[in-house]
Amino acid sequence: MTDIPSGTCNVVLGSRITEDSETYAAAASFSPHFADTLIDSIDFKSTDHILDIGCGNGIFTSRFAPQVGYVLEVDSSPSMIDAAKTRNYGSTSTDFRAVNCRLPEDDQEIMNSNWDEVASNAAFHWILRDPSTRISTLKAIFRSMKPGRVFFSEMCGHGNAPEKFTAFKFGLVNQ
Image (cartoon, rainbow, N blue to C red; front, side):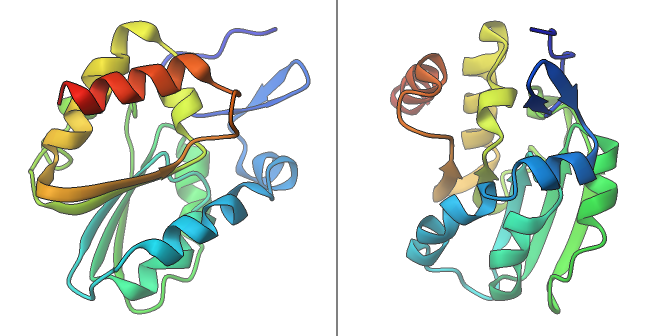
């Protein structure tokens, strides 16, 4: 299997890896649908400011963005950010940036502690791939939110990424 370049959120197709948004959309069109139940369970407010980490092509974000006040979509892939910019987010103010999703603490706009919620769909098995950044990434995400707020994420199927779930649970306990 090909190594995944550091700091990228990609999709593996057989032995090929792609950051191309069109290839990703074709190969992983099922992915945003896994989060529908999760999105339906969140009590969004029209004033909420949400950070979407690993936003990909923006399909997931487009499902909840019309209910909130502002979304910052970040992804490691400029191609994914370009695709996300083409989505309809209703009247919600939405900004986009290509950033290293594994090192959110390096970006002051992300780390402003003003996020009502932090969201992620089917990206953490890529973002948490490097064991050396797992805990610091999760801690940074929780520090980026207002106290007592919510991190909501769909992180792949049961048993698919056991090391990532362990790191996530450790991050929750030790935040």
